[in-house]
Structure formats: C-alpha cells, structure tokens
Image (tube, rainbow, N blue to C red; front, top):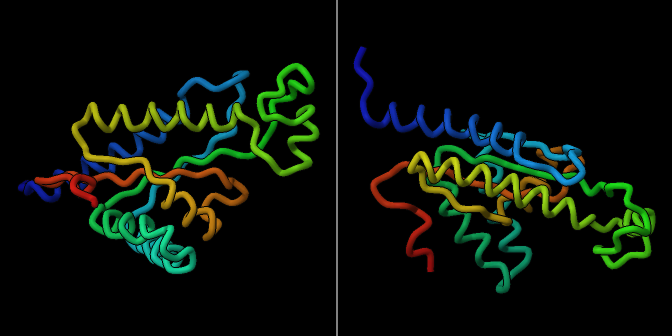
Length: 178
C-alpha cells in the first residue's frame, strides 16, 4: 500500500477532529454537568457553513468583514470541529448572581446565558485546541463559524457555538490574516 503525504495528512486531521471531540467531552465542567455538544464538518456540510459565513458577512456589513475573511480561511481547511453549549442554568438560584440576574430563574426567563455555560465552553475549547497544538495541526477558534452553524441549526437548540478549522499545510491559513 502506498499512502502519499496528502492522504496521510487528511486522515491525520480527521482523526484529530474525532479526538478533539473527545477532549471537549472529557474537559472539566462546572458542577459536573455536561451541557456540551460537538460535531465534525467536512465536504458539503463545511461548504454550507462557509456560504452562511459569507452571507452573514454581507448581512452584517462593514462591521463584520471578519466573517468573509474567516470564510476564506475555512474554505481552505478540510475539517471543522464545532463545540456548542446550551443556555442552561446550574440551579444555584440566589447563591450566585454572576450573570447579574436575581437568580437562575430570572436568567433563564430572560433567555440569558449562565456564566458557567461560557466557562464550560471555554474549558472545552481550550482542551480541544491544546490537543490540536500538541499534534502540530494549525487551528483557530472562530466565533463566526459558530454563528453560521447556529444560523443553520446544525447543533439543534445549542446556540452558543464556536468552530475550530483544522489545517495541515506548509503554511498556516490563519497567519497573515489582515
């Protein structure tokens, strides 16, 4: 069997994406409750996200040109990992207040995000990208991918989503981004 460098790199990047989903899942969670979801995008599904990123860049206008720049980067990558979190409270009620609401019920009623959701997502993202860095695969956390994925409903009712494109080329597409 002969496996050329392109085939080896594509397989390694996809295998890494699977491992990153595991790293996100096993990352520590506040109160030990898991409210995360992960997914891997390739091919047409990734292309749909790229198209949505471009559309959002046009809709949001001048202030969101990063969506279009990011779409170019994602288009050049074979794989994207999505990591999302639900807007659920942790049931601490009036013992917390970090969200600046009176209690968890008021936070939920307002449709706001519990601060612990952001913490869990951040820890999961850090765990996933650390693994990618350890494997020497170029990556970057992009909120624009997450907004496009949420707009397309790719993770269902998960609305706090970030995307991580992966690249194994001679030069990182995330360098010299302007």
